[in-house]
Image 1 (tube, rainbow, N blue to C red):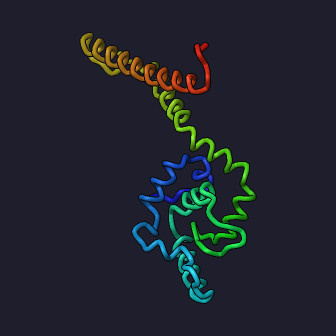
Image 2: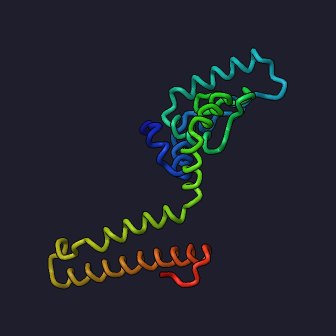
Image 3: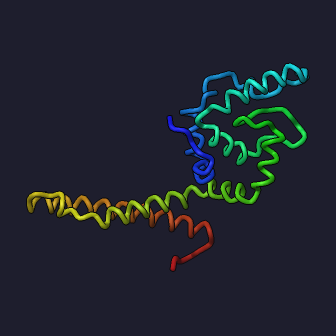
Length: 179
């Protein structure tokens, strides 16, 4: 699996980030206790385990995705050295989160707007479907007609999906009649 960059992770929605981590993280299937300090664990034991966890995270191809998820989830506290995520300790995560608070707030809001993301995808598909030329790929008059009918059905289906989502969003936002 290719390495995810920090820039890509920042512009990726939560579901995609989580799927990437689940599919390609080095820690998948490992004992999660390695990344969390146990209650009353002596400092020397925790420091040794923490270094091992950091070492595993540093070389993980999904480190950037994991860090972005940790930041969006609010993991880590400035005063508590109790975990490692994406190769960062709790205080390090808290410092990064404080520094990037504005960007993270926008990302979390966008993660919540799955309908908006779905509308963007459907609109892109609709534009593509509506601008295809079915005459190019068809060899006979009959196949041209079949291609056009299939294209028209696809455009109608996409337009219906977009209309349903927009109508539901407008109703939730108090619009009685859509302009």
